[in-house]
Length: 72
Image (cartoon, rainbow, N blue to C red; front, side, top):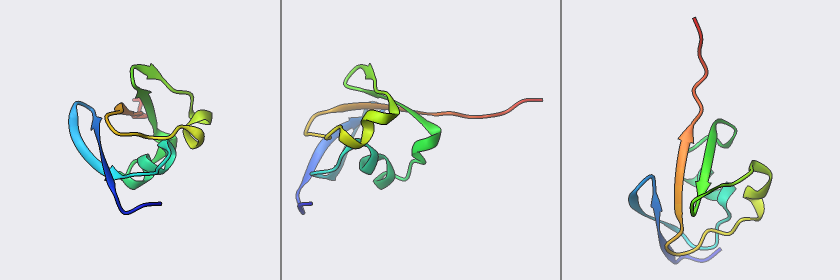
């Protein structure tokens, strides 16, 4: 991994993160619990099994939605 950073859009906000991460590593870096989120990556819902192989690059766009369990 390199010491450089890249700029991405996360839920509509500009965010800087380390370069060289895959999607799973990025989610963990940002403090998400990967088993509890759904990710739209550059406009496409990305299946969880693809996250470890999906590189995150400059200007990528992510929408991360946390799954909330509940009931009455």
